[in-house]
Image 1 (cartoon, rainbow, N blue to C red):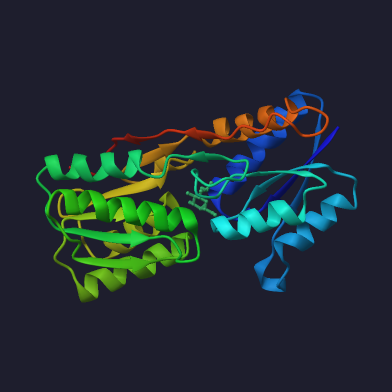
Image 2: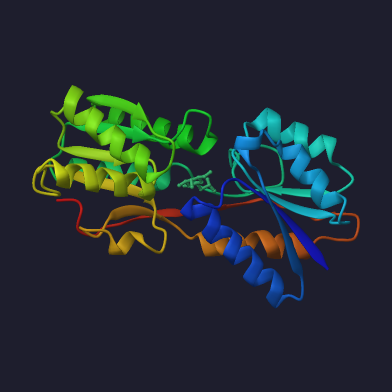
Length: 269
Ligand code: IPT
């Protein structure tokens, strides 16, 4: 009657929204959720977190932390006494997962901006150690290449607003000649909006911005953010349902890939 959740920092909007959904749907099904948050500052490992949950007799664990395919497979093998379901892995890898299509929303973003007449793109991707950040970046680059375009610059942030703010200042300083900026998530886009505003850069007049996630706050940024919408609530629900419908021996595992779609608001033109 208890599910486990090992999660990356809940200070980030997307994982915290997913955790809330997991708890809600589990509770509705009569299950409790024990949460173990990976604290990188104290050098606590994913396995430490799983062990913490195992010691509470949890035998089904949702893992929302960025993992390369090899690492996810290793975790699954090392913990075959329980069921592990992964939320932040390459959707096409072999481990049991519920994740988002990493390409449909990114492709739609580039296509939309291209059709609006944009040719000079800057990319502010998520951290290099995140699979999802890399998949989104790759899809932006591939789509731009299909239009025979290369970005004016590619930089990386660390998902939070502060890094988006710093990244935007760096772009304005080093390669200011872009008209469109694709950002790896909405929190970084929030920082970008703040930096542009402080420097008198009009959005979308001078620069169009597209984020990624569409967390609850994104429609309330100024201007309201055009972004790739992930149904994080649905991801939480699917994860819970897929775990709870497994047989006693954990048989019946099937992964699913959820769509991501572009939501056009006011930060693009
Ligand atoms: C991913 C979010 O898109 C990003 O904003 C950040 O919060 C990250 O998680 C944290 O790891 S969503 C993930 C399920 C791919």
